[in-house]
Image (tube, rainbow, N blue to C red):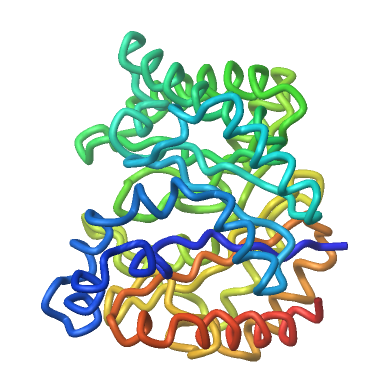
Length: 326
């Protein structure tokens, strides 16, 4: 059975804010990015509430986002045990998205000292994942400045990244360790073939590593900087056929609208390349890959989505279940 989960992103941040602040956000007086700054950590902190939300929405998996800012490294042993117990009692599986900005983006850094600091940071979140009983962790493959995009630099970057992945995958133990493709603005590892190559190299060195193909991230190729833009094909779901089945455990499902530069719009509103027929075809391909979990990452980019947040997640979930035949 494929589990269907959600990373709640910013959809319900307004619910943890004081009423006066919430009303200013819903009226547009406070912008969406400021909303995240005001309430993101507070929302992330209440994992037990997220589990309640998942159950109420008919989900059986949630992904916790350990990108900065987050409170997870400071969770006590008791708090971690409570999350684990509640998830198990409600048959909700967990995954943790490792840090991908700030120090976390340094996992591919060619400077050994810097890279080791990034690895140390990721281990804090892998410890958290272990303690709460998470089945999966997911990591972006780091970033690099545009002036390191030459072949020789990229060889050095990939060698550094492999060292990080080998160490972190071993540290994770029984947790399924995933590499996720970047967005094009990170300059590295946007195309699936690059991650497949990376995962293959890590596997040859004995690491059990998987590929989490985020199709919405791949759509950002349409706006890749530096003259590297590539079109999104008419049938973008076909890209899923390039992933070897043995590399699949967890997948992220979201969309991207190049025309308006909108990340993670609600899937049922069909604003991006994933029209209904594409999502139905995506479902057929993905079912053959037999992932353990598919995670929705819908986010609110306009205040109108926040006003409708409860109806929006309900309608989107029904739509996705229909399209994916889950």
